[in-house]
Length: 204
Image (cartoon, rainbow, N blue to C red; front, top):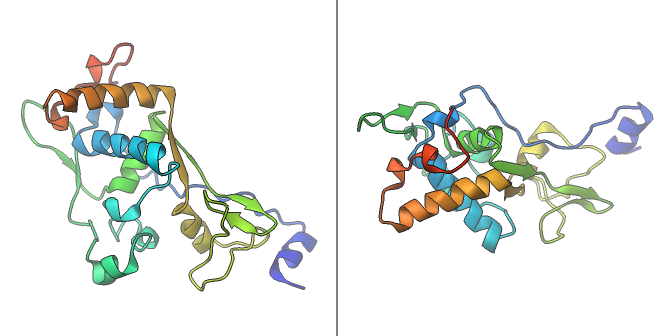
């Protein structure tokens, strides 16, 4: 009897994998700055050209915060912590021209903040008879090169599946993103973008 049969026989339901948000160091919408708005625009670009799947080498990842996502991109590039962003905190909204940051906060935390704000949604890969499928319909493999079994997956598999999550902008997210892009198109630094300038939206 294989592991999935044992789980079924025991009447245990694993449920569906969820995006592994930490939610322990959130940033309020009113504090969003350069990193949050740049990331929102980046996600929009990935929805247009890459079906909403992120390129993880493009994201700041702190090994202290998200160690299992540190190697979600190219292993060769991240070997030895080359791309560990633990020492690069999130840049917040400037107040009276003063630069402010949130320590112990990386782009994955920013993604969680954007979901919490109602600007982004995230969908994990769906299960099928042949395994969890990526956006192109290919079975997703675990770290050992084996197909992840929808009937028996672990927390480590859940982090692996997170690499293939599909991101989308909500209607509000699109509205904010359009305004942020217009701000950038006017040759204004994204660090000076004011959410209160978006009609119908106020920063809390």
